[in-house]
Amino acid sequence: MSLEIRQITDEEVEASEFITAYSFNSPERRDLTKAVERSKSFYPTGWSLASFEDGEMTAFVRSIPFAARINGRGLSYAAVGPVVSLPQHRRKGHVGAILRQFLEQMRENGQVLSGLHTPHPTLYQRYGWEIASMAHTFKFPPKEIHFKSEPKDRGYIRMLKADDWAQANRVYRLHSAKRNGPLHRGEVWWRQAIFGGGFLPDPSDVALWEDATGEPQGYVVYYQPARPQPHESEFWVREIVALTTDAYLNLLLYIVRHDLPKEIAINAAPDDPFYSLVDDARHVKVEEGYDLMNRIVDVEAALKLRPPANPELDLEFALQLSDRTAPWNEGTWLVNQSDGEIAVEKTNAAANLKMSTMTLAPLYNGFLTPTAAAFAGRVEADSEESLATADAFFATLHPPFCSDGF
Ligand SMILES: CC(C)(COP(=O)(O)OP(=O)(O)OC[C@H]1O[C@@H](n2cnc3c(N)ncnc32)[C@H](O)[C@@H]1OP(=O)(O)O)[C@@H](O)C(=O)NCCC(=O)NCCS
Image (cartoon, rainbow, N blue to C red; front, side, top):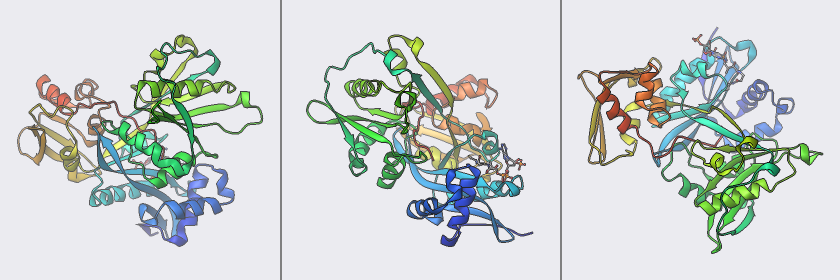
């Protein structure tokens, strides 16, 4: 039996879409026309790798080139998804082989980080991805919700159409300026994944808030599936992006005044102050779960490119890494921050900290501090001082959060 891993061709898009639709039990599996059309319009075959056993496609993975913000800087980021294989070919190691090959390819492409969403975290931990953000959802019956603060300026709400994507993008970029996790969204992504609804069966609504001077200061993306009984419907807020308090309060008021749905769910960043704004928190259910898994593809480049949260500090530590699936990351790295510049080089010095590259991923984007990781037994440190130095180095300005699905 021969196993080949390679990019798919245009003629093989249908087979890859069948594996995808079948694996996620999407209704599209019975008629692949739309899926094939979408794939050909939005996803170049060069972003794919598939496994072929004796010529038959058995598994398929796509890696979408993005940039993700880390302390505000956009770093080259490989967003992996879908990852699928045919049931009759599962547990043969085909997906694992594709992921290994993708890691090498990502490194060659200069993609220093990678991320994915999954219900199978243990699968990806085998290949160095680790949980690196949490998703919070606030759920409440809209009629029971009142706020403790009121906006000073009522401003204006304006519904946007896909052709207006640049107006939302401007606010999004300003909001992302110092954050961890947001992806750089281009026009195609705005049209297809945000306005178009992405994986959802219907498009999303997008409402922009402008202050009294007409300046856009925030927007909300939400989704209301069409239902014969509107009071039974779900109402899901995918993201609220606000540059000012008035934008935040007005957009929330706009959302809760949708008073027919039984329940509204708001997807929020970990530092979203929604809970402390509501006057009677008993009406709000909070759901939390792991969200993104990240992988440091190229440790040397990723450490060099990471903007320091505290550039005024001079810091140095030696970091020893193990990495079975990306051996180029292995060894001991001397990390030096001085005058706001970062230098990283291999060293023979004794390590101050020892961990796997997998453990480094949630430290890198500020999901976990080195001290907390050491407390959990995931980092070996030679002293408390070394941990404090690493805590200062890996400090972030905001907790990591990315509201994009891929
Ligand atoms: C999840 C899925 C892609 C795995 O595919 P597969 O072809 O079985 O994967 P492989 O055989 O290459 O397995 C690679 C490794 O992951 C492990 N693994 C496979 N599926 C796993 C799972 N669901 N949970 C944990 N580990 C898993 C395997 O045991 C193997 O580890 P090993 O080399 O140490 O034995 C496949 O089951 C699938 O398509 N499921 C439905 C769609 C889906 O859930 N996709 C993933 C969305 S992120």
